[in-house]
Image: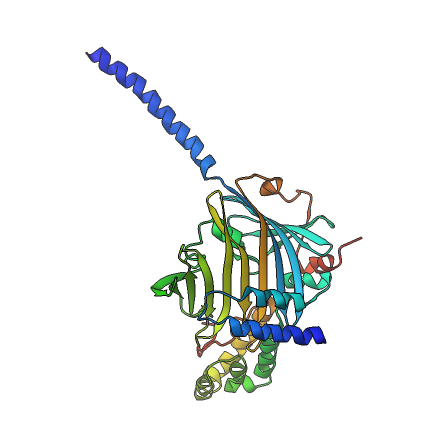
Length: 131
Length: 255
């Protein structure tokens, strides 16, 4: 647990010393971050080859469930994906996302995205996210 | 007179033909360059670290061959110039084709630099256009934007040092938030080939409030030294499998 908190502190330190305005990074802070980290078992090391990615996947899953329970008609799934809140208004004004077509297609595209392990629809500002 | 002129033409033509042939034969030999480097790739996320060691072999115009090692596991991957990647697992004699979305040769910085992508960090090939250039202290900073709209990345920024080597690359989303930033340092030049031996990538892609830090430490850079793995070919008798079929054998190799 100590190592975990030390790693978090080091991670925050790295974030503090390396911002977009700087073009070089504090290499000592980076090295410290890796020194403090706990090495995962070799089996887990192969995970990136075969698994789909962490929190983007969770967000996609939640959005998919919300979409298919009916809240997709109001564009709530898009809010979860991080779109502009105004898009929800468009979903409502077009009678549930062009008469309910958009939530259905959005759901299919989210399933495809989940299978491919992508995060193509996060923070997407467009009304029709897959165009 | 006419005899003399004819003789001059007669001796000159074969000479030029020979010269042209010699040039045609030797040109590809000069263009062929061999690159090899070892890398220890470490990734930290939420205090946990993954370590993968790789041996990278690339011959210009040929395949990018990689020997991947993680703990006791090892396998080969070969990526053709057309972008198709096939993995080979010696422990099971199985091969598996990867989707280009899963692995791309340009993901490897050795390939990018060997293919001359150092100037724009492969952004032009990735569909970006140079929009502006500015000076920021000792650095020259270029801004690139995607040609097509609808991309998750709204713009990219590359900073170059005094010697015009890329030292910083960042990608931003439409809200101006950082997606990924990469620092390239400890440049080394070997037989005219300049390469960063330390690459630090800080990614904010997966989570909004946390980052993933990846550190690639390169060593044993070799240029124009042909090795066996430059021409590595997957055995013809390898059993072709799909990603789904091969899942168990990747994680738990047969004993």
